[in-house]
Length: 418
Image (cartoon, rainbow, N blue to C red; front, side, top):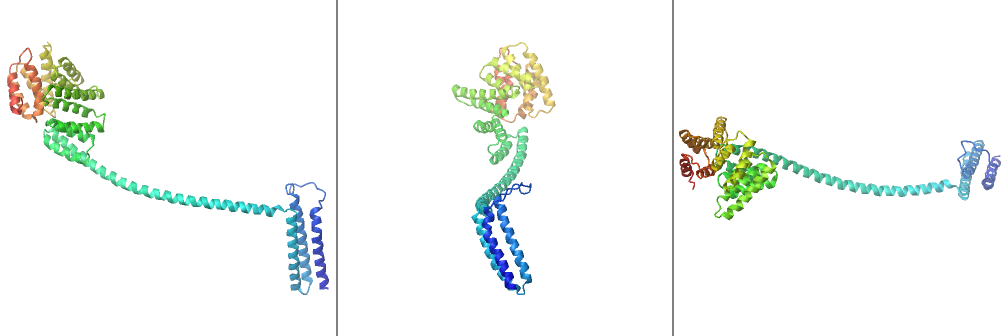
């Protein structure tokens, strides 16, 4: 009978429910654990037993349903009965402290908290990335502007170098005013460039614009404190400006400045012939003749083939009455002639050295001819002043030089010197 089979199923399910607590509470003798079950908690095994019993009930119900002619009713009853069984089983599992669900809930809660923290951190990272991206864009714009600036600066520097070379050539050719115009054009674009200010200051000094020369050369040494040539030219400009001062006190101030910059140039480059010779000229003007001779001798040792340094050694030796003075003039004549033959860039200097040596050695006609050629090639009165200074010194020597007054008068007349 169908109802009997159904009743049997229900009775079996009810029996299972009634025995479930006993199954959980009653602990069977502890068997020797196998490696597979050694680490599994007892509560979990009890719960598993209950679930296995429920599965057995389900299997029996399924078998009864297959035998029952009214299958649908049986299945509906099974679902109803199994629902009760599942509910009671869940309650039992909760009653005995089944920790799996609780552990799962705790894990889920912890996961949600970590997920929230991760979302917050992710949002912060997104904001940080946006900020970094903005900085990168700003940096990119700066680099573009810098690139344009560098490109323009490179073009300006290239043009400045070309113009500077042209100006230097004009200066070497004695076209000082033309060179100044080019240098000033270059400096208008690069006002603090050391090389440009040096070239301009040197040109100003050669045409007697000493204030402008000192300003430009001071810029050069400020830009490059180790600029040896700029220090030397700055000392020379102060020495030249000293000669324009109306009082001995003002001249002394300029001479001290000149000495400072010249000695600084020599400190930076001990074997600097131009600085040593210029310092010798400063000492000669201050009538410090032994010091002047020593400076010129050092310059001549640096460059034994320089007629300028050796020429001043000869002049001072003659003035001081040294026996080797004539030998020095003979040597000057040889060196000056060699420099003229080699095509010295400022040929008027060795021409003046040769003319004076010829005059001292008694070759007066040759001397006058050479002297006229030297005057014709002397570009400015400032250069003529440098030539005149040793001639005036020799005029005061104890041993006179025949024809020296003619040299002095001719030079003063040509360049309006007093």
